[in-house]
Image (cartoon, rainbow, N blue to C red; front, top):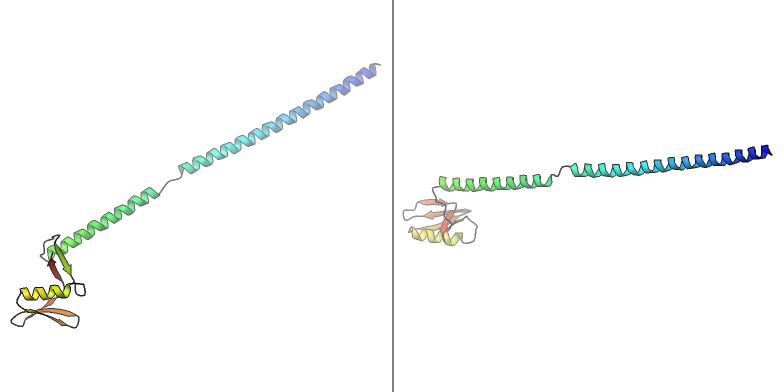
Length: 146
């Protein structure tokens, strides 16, 4: 009978030992899964940090484009002013420049000729004001006051 008790104790101990090994394996597997989940969460966090640290260029590009446009406008205004000063013409808002081929140029040329007591002549693509003495003055543009 002793052997039966010993055998019963031995078999009971084996199942308990097996249960402990299974419990230990389950705990290790749960730890491994927890570590995987934690690693995935850390990877997401680092991805978010990397995306938020990425530089944003569109405001810089927009400001640079606006600065270039403003500079070009200032340079254009300056060149127009210099051309008017070099031509001896004051910049006035009521003056209008007419070039040959623009609407109203022929009428303005006739009026300018009448004011000077002469006439307007067109030869090919060139326009001339002819005074009373027969002197021809070429006309490349007219400044008209409105």
